[in-house]
Image (cartoon, rainbow over all chains, first blue to last red; front, side, top):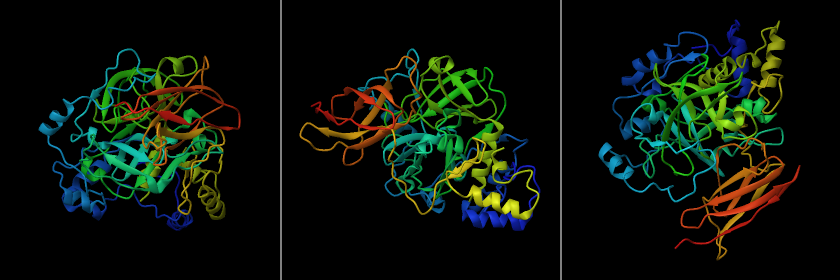
Length: 324
Length: 139
C-alpha cells in the first residue's frame, strides 16, 4: 500500500506523536487484523498487498459465504436485517418501482437507462447506501472499514459549513429496498479536504467515512486508479432518490475531463452523490466520485460529473484507509 | 500530496514535524493545498446551520409533519451554480435544511403518499430563506 507519509522517512516516535495528537493510532494498512475472521485473513492480506504502484489500489471480492454470525463479528448491526435470495429479489424487482410515480429529475440525460441491481454479488454489494439526519447519499467501500463518498455527504461545504451529524449515520452495504443483506454500520469519523470544507469547491468535493465495523471483509471493496480517464468506460452504481433505497447502475464512458474532474453521460439523480465512477476491465476500479448533475456552462452543462481520482485524491484515500 | 499535508517533505526537524501534525489535527484549518485532509471532531456532533440557503417545514394539509420528503432545488439561472446531488430529506418534525448559493430556484417536493409540489424560492446573499411546504395526500 502507498504509505500515509509518502516518500518520507519518519521515525516511529514521531508517527506515534502524530497518532496521539489526532487521538487515533495510525497502523500499517497492509497488516491484516485479527477481528476479520481467520478464514478470510489470507485473502484479505493478499488483496492488501496487490497494490502495484502509486495511485493504484486493488479491489477485493470479499467472502464467498456470508453469515449473520460473520457480520456480527465484524461489528455490523444485523438485527432486523432481511436477507434475500436471488429468487426473492427477482420477485421483488418485478414489482412496480417505488419511485416510478415520481417525476424524473433533471439529470437523466436523454432516456432513463438505469438498471436495477441484485446486491448480493460483488461488486454491487461493496456499494453503500448512506443515511444521516437530513439526507441520503451513495458511496463505495475501499477497504474493510472505509467508505469514500462526496464531500457534501459528510460536510455542508465552505468555511461557514459544518460536519453533518456523525452519530446519525447509517451505512448499508448492498441495501436493496426493504432488505439490508449486510446489516448496517455506524460512523467512527468523517473526513474531507479543505478544498471542500473551506473553499466549497466542486473540484474537491470528496470525502470518506470511517466505519465502526469491518463489513468490507465480507462484501469486498473497490480499488482505485489514477490512470488517465480519457474515453474510459464508466459505470455509476448508486442509490438514486427517485428510486428509494434500491441500487441502480448505468454504463457510459468518460466524455471529458479536467485536472480534477471527470464528466460522463451516466444517468444520476439526487441521492446518487458519492457513488463511485468505476470501470471493471481489471476488477472494480474507481476512477472518480460522482457529485453533480448538469449546471453552468461547457462540459458542466452537458454531462453529469464528479471528482477525478488524482494522485492527491488517491493519497488521501490511502491515508483514510490506513486509519483504524 | 494529500499525505504530505500531514508531513511536509521540507520539514527539517522533529519540532517542525510535530507542529505540522498538531496543525493537521485542527479540523477545518486551511493548510495551503485544497487537497489537505481534514476530519470532524469527536467532541462535537455538528448541527447543520448554513449561512446561506433554504430551510423550512414540510407538512400535510392537516398540519402534521411529513418525514422523509425529498426536496429538490433546480436553479432558474441560465448558467446556474452547482447543486450537490444528495437527497435532502425532511426530518421527523418535517424540517429540512438546504445549503445553497444565492439565486432563484424551482423547488420540487416529493413524498410517498402525497402529491408532488413545485414552488419557487429566492435565496438572497448571506440569508437563509424559509420555504414551508404543504402537501396534499394522494389517496
